[in-house]
Amino acid sequence: MKKLKCICLILSALLLMQSVIVPMAAEAETMQTEPTETEQTLTPLTEELPFGTVCIQKGCRTINGMAPLAGSEKKLDTAQSVFLFETNSNTVVYAYNPDLKLHPGTLAKIVMALIVVENCGMDDLVTVTEGIQSYVPAGVNKVQSESLKSNEEIKVKDLLYSLLLVNANDAAVALAHHVSGTTAAFLELMNKRVKQMGCTNTEFGNVSGLYTAVSNSTARDMARIVMEAIKNENFKEIFGAKSYQIPDTNMVQGRKEFKTQNYMIDDSTLQDFYDSRVTGGFASYYESYGASIVCTAEYKNMNYIAVILGATRTFAENGWQPVNYGNFNEMASLLEYAFNSFKINRIIYEDMALSTFKVNGGECNAVGQATVNVDSVVPINAQMKNIQMNYKAVGGGLSAPIKKDQLIATLEVVYRTSVLAEVEVYAMSDVKPADKTGVTIRSAAVEGSKAPSGLLSALGTICVIVLGAAIAYMTFNAYMRTRIRARRKKRRSQRRRSN
Image (cartoon, rainbow, N blue to C red; front, side, top):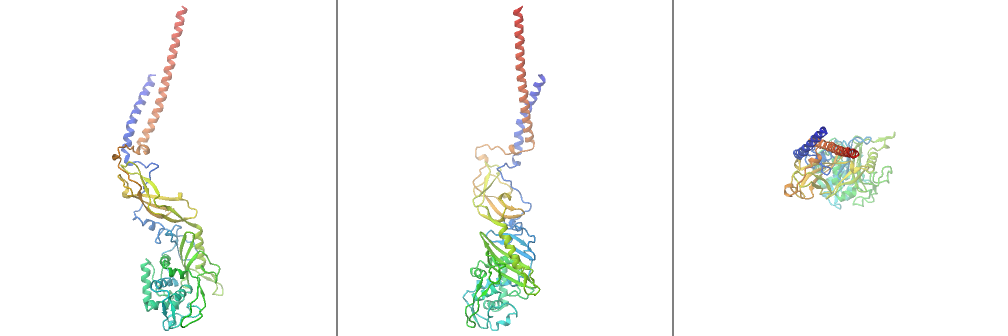
């Protein structure tokens, strides 16, 4: 019993020490505590980039995005460069060699048409240059049914339809002379305009895109050009037209209706590539440059600009009948991939409560909210749980006081290896300093610490269990001894009576 009493005394002393040491350890660790389940971890980025540039340099946001959502591996058979951009959500969905400089061929006419609609009225009359045919190389596309005549008076609108539907080079010369006086002066306008659009990798050698080694562009730059051009309603209407007939002029009557050479938008000439989702486009082919195409396409809430440069066209043994068009075949595959593999989700809502953030010295955690809606393209089977939210505190950490609507953090929304968006996070309400409230705030370190305090807590628990067992044993032992003494006393009393 004496040994047992000693053990109890030792255990009681250990319990007393634990009750003193644990709070001291917790107080020492207050500023180093791990967040509780309701607090958001604020993870520093491995590389510091200014806010708003991470989703570009390491993500797919805006047309400048360098990490496409679907990656940059080769998906089409022969295209040298591909760019797929969703305009509603500002997302680069897929890109393959998007900044590779290639000859754009007659895609240069898109820039030409944009400059014309920006500088002319659609019903303005153009007087065709004397000797127009001498400015146009032999054997190239011209205004269909009958080429332009010297001194013919024809509307700007008629020439633009000829330019974009049938790639007419005499129309290109007539428009250039009308706007700038010479094709050289108009070419200067074209190169200046593309620089204004941010196309740093684009330069044109002539107005039509024919027979020049100087011209170069990229799939990303062509997407920029188209995105700017379709803001103009006159351009957009012609870009999506299936057919057109030029009215009679002072020189030519009875020109026949002509069809677009973009087989993605019209099936009257060739049915193989027609796609009802395609809203506009322009195609180019020359043996030395390859087959290229740009298209706009729309379905449900998705609007795409798709660009293919330098695809390979193959022909039958007769040498003129295409077996594989290259640009049209691969654009059809690209659009099927675009619409069947992806969807648009709203990943952040305006006024959405995002998470809670620990505030050092604060009466409580700060609740962060977004102030904007953020939509993004995501894979068709993607779930929100697969989208990662990475937060970074402003200034490296938050300290009381915090004011309502104060910027407290930034958020990077990541899917796999691509940053979908960056969002500023603001406080939903004030957070006062704890010493201003009259309320004692227990440190989260007591619950979250894992080092000395955790060990001492475990030791204290063991001591309580052992001490409780020892006290129970001593109590039971004392009870049994009392009963034994009572029996002995009773027996002695009975013996005395019998004697």
